[in-house]
Length: 215
Image (tube, rainbow, N blue to C red):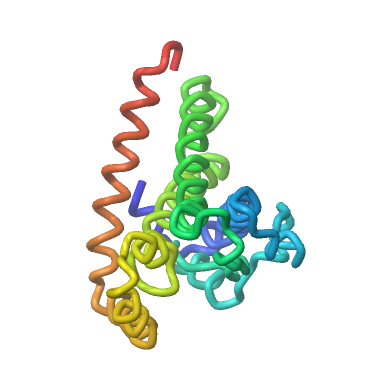
């Protein structure tokens, strides 16, 4: 399933458009909703706590998802000082986006398995390829955003655990973050991190689904 991610034919890229809308919208909505639950209404007041993908698309990040399968959306505005618990709020709001993609990826595979086993999806057909993209890109986006590199979600999760005395030192690294990400992509290190991790997660999904009765 991983190989289909790097297939750049026009059909695959076209199929990624609806996938992109689903993946990004769910991810950013989850951030906004979790922030609201922790007492910060910043995203809600700016109209970002909704399922309209137009509000969440970032031009460059969206293009990256279309071409290579991972990228980013327009960040949801949050004010962590509004959280009723700063560190806990920062941690869960940051994790909400990747978690939502893991959940959507799992249920996409579940639905795909049911439909495919029921003969409702033809092997290699458009619906087959759509689900491939939907499943793998959700997992890739989740893993990409969990990298502890600013401004990705993983960096904020890490910050929620770092003591105040070391927080300033970590924040100084933010100025180098874009260069680190570019270097990881160009050297192929990013792929060597994400691809094996995605394979493990997909295998776990398949194991869980295989244990479900009637699947």
